[in-house]
Length: 112
View 1: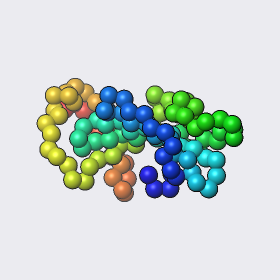
View 2: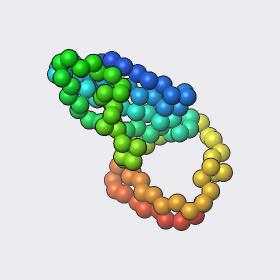
View 3: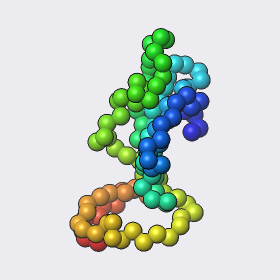
């Protein structure tokens, strides 16, 4: 992760969720970043921003990542070299969402 520093701790859950703690090399700033693997083409990411610890505190996943909230915004990442996957059955229903493509925001409200 460019600009985040050195990875000092890592946790893997069921091969689909990965949590990392990075230490910024120039100060005592730690970042917790959690990746959620949704499909082979889609990742979601959330992070804490800078977390400062006392010198005697060890930068563990539990300590640095405790500010991650399950309801906080996620950043969705899409593979540029995607593998076609039929995921229609997992998306059936009525959904409302927004997405951004470089030059603005589009809204969708309807069924699939």
